[in-house]
Length: 319
Image 1 (cartoon, rainbow, N blue to C red):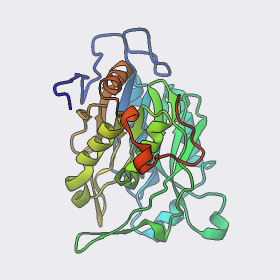
Image 2: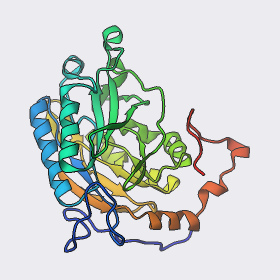
Image 3: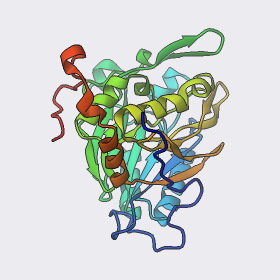
Image 4: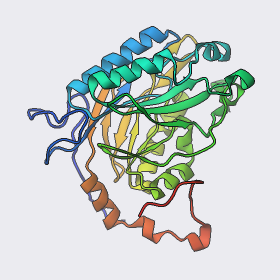
């Protein structure tokens, strides 16, 4: 490895272009201003109205500071006390709540990464199960992409954490091609997907420049694995990694780890939220990303003749 390659991007509670005119929220901005992303950290509860008010407040604040994309975490809509409540509160993508977020995107002129919507899909009447859906809205409020979580979190840490997402959730069936946004080509994942480098490598091969992992990590797993996994995904893919997270006590039997952050393609944490609800900001410097890729060209050094190629069905490699 070559040591010492560094970049300073600015970072936690104020945008890095303080004192300069903010770029247009829906565009990358004039030459010299890099696109700004905002990462939201919330404490969702079973109360959908309170959750929407909190999230909408963060989106409006971020838009006012010139963010092009606002990222919200898994469970931004709500976190239920049990499977029955989780199922009962779920809606379709054509429902009232997603309509309100579409209005919010239009009002604020921003892209919204809504990172873990409890979706009643078309098969709800027959399966009585939901999807964990990462919805991406453009500034016109259009649904640009809907990634359904492919890796479901079934874990049991004796005496600490028990989760069985597969008990009420259908797994997604495809990885989506990266989406072009004002900040770069965005690859969509959700939370537990973070533990599977294959998905990040498939998205990188398909042209991703930003990987996003909206999450609701528990305290035991988050304190052990959150930052190191996110930095690993950034280093191996040479992408920016954006991870919005739940933080604090969601209800009487669940507490989330928090620590929403942004990692650059060198593996440096360039933005991070403090405890509790809030925002952090980072500029996305694609010139720097391509410099990292030129100086350590790992994509060209891969040996598919020895261990195969990590690719997702239906995703063409980037030119």
